[in-house]
Structures are given as C-alpha cells and as structure tokens.
Length: 215
Image 1 (cartoon, rainbow, N blue to C red):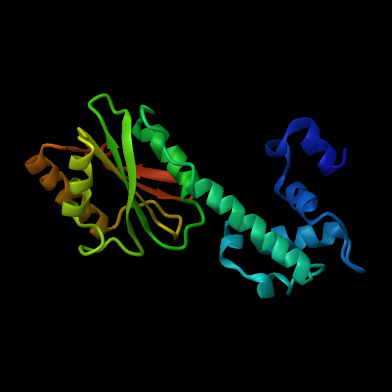
Image 2: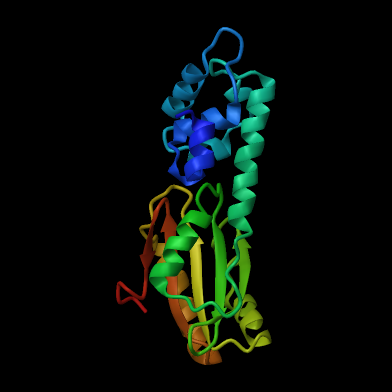
C-alpha cells in the first residue's frame, strides 16, 4: 500500500516518518528517486525535531531537494510547530503532573529557547488560565514570582504549576531550576497560592519536583 493510500485508510499517525515525508514531498525530483531523498532526510535528521532548526538552504544540500520542496518542508514543520504551540489547556480541564508533563513534552518539543508556562488552577486542579510568562532564559529578571503571582491573583487562582523546557532534551533540573522552584515556593506561601509542582520537560520525558519530594 502506497503512503497516501495508507494515510487515507489508517490516518497519518499510522505512517512511519519516512512515509510521511513521501506523502509531503509527493514525487521524485529529477534523477533522484523519492525514496533516496526521504532516506537521506531521516539519516541526516533521525529524530525529525532537528528540522525545526534548519532552513531552505541547508535542506537543499540533500539529494532531490530543490528550493520548492525544501520550502514546502520548512513550511510544514513550522505549521506543525504552531499547531503544537496553540494547543493550550482548556478552561476547566483537570490536570495532573503526569498528564501535564506528557502533553507539555510534546507541545514544547523543538523549541529552540527556554519557555516558562504558568498553569493556574482552582482548588480541584481544574485549569483557570495558562500564561507564557518568560522566554529565552529563566534568570531572575525573566522569571519573577511577582509577575506570575500578579496573574494568579487576577484570575483568583488557588494553585500554581510551573512548566519549562530544556531545549537540550535533558529534563534534569539545573541548580538555577532548583533555586527558581524554591523562590516560587516561598512566594506562594506568602501570597497564599501554593506552588503545586514545577515540571522540567526535555525531549519526550520530564522531571517533577513534586514527585521527587522537592516541594
């Protein structure tokens, strides 16, 4: 069964990475067979996540990828990234550390910089609001508890969960992550909105400060 037929019959999730690329690229380019192009792509970018960081000129260095197909591939990757970013948590959705870690690992995959997300919940852990509160580095200036708790107070939140990514793919918390967690624990105790958890996501895995007994 050809990839397009398999997609229609079973859905895109049933296809391998190489089959999805064959559907996207459509046909061979010049003297280079399509299978040679997709094989070169998966060999050069085995996790596919790396495609989020390459441009048209870099892709054109691979066999069978001219400016049109390279641009199409870049556009598809960016469209997928935007879909992931815009999959915000639903208002009223009850969240757990495990479920939130899994969804955020997928959503923040491919981000080239650190992103800090504040999930504000009611007493039953149902989502009231979600805010991206810092980008590009979680230092004291970027991740200020006063800014985050101001948002929490505006929506009458009862609890707070922090989530941030490690672009390296390793979710192991750094000393700065640990210090950040303690600052939010202390601020939450003063404000009366406790920090329920701080999740560090990297690749397909995550670290929970609460599960590790650090909160």
